[in-house]
Image 1 (cartoon, one colour):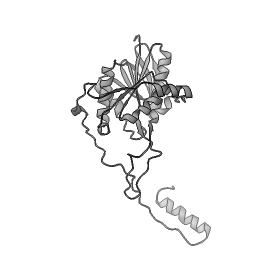
Image 2 (cartoon, one colour; image 1 turned 60 degrees about the horizontal axis):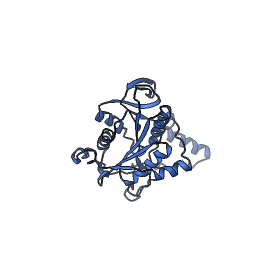
Image 3 (cartoon, one colour; image 1 turned 90 degrees about the vertical axis):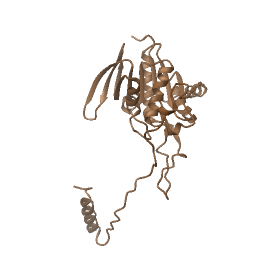
Image 4 (cartoon, helix red, strand yellow; image 1 turned 120 degrees about the horizontal axis):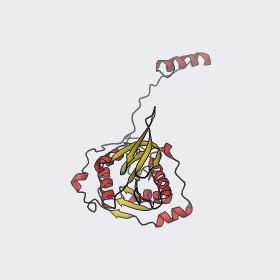
Length: 264
């Protein structure tokens, strides 16, 4: 049994998709000017990590974010929920890092900064929702990966988790160290109080670079590059239904919808 359970939780400061806007002329989503916030799934990850710590005296929750300086906001959110420590991995070219690079940096940080027993992530980010960082991280660390966790029990030397497989639920057991990803059904993140937010604003964030983690720039070269983010074009049918009584118009509309497969 680990005397001092070491829990890491990853948080992303991503695009607020509810407030992102597209240029009407080009159809391109204006990512540079879009507001950003902590990914919703990551709040569930932090909440679950804090709940585990509350049941294991002496456990420590370290929140980590990979990104630009603004990612401090996501780390402050994590501390306000209950994380004990905060680490930011950043570099001038952070915007070029893909999911492989992020996973490598998370793995290097956990190795260099004290190791871990349990690494918790959201099952995907609110903006991209690629769902790749968790599995890639487990691959980098060479440990078990338990994805889509909806219920978690921490035992002396590992975890028992219920996985959501859409049509069925699978229960698995994994020994420490283990990486797991959680969805929103696992818990309801607590709302930080005024005092917890104040405490989080004063919390020191440890800032490290890839070089500090002994990760060469070549190892972070992107293999996936986002060329453009645009609103999909949905051509209009431009079907006009006119003339006749309301009953006749309704019948024509019903037939048009049936032709398009909207109605049986």
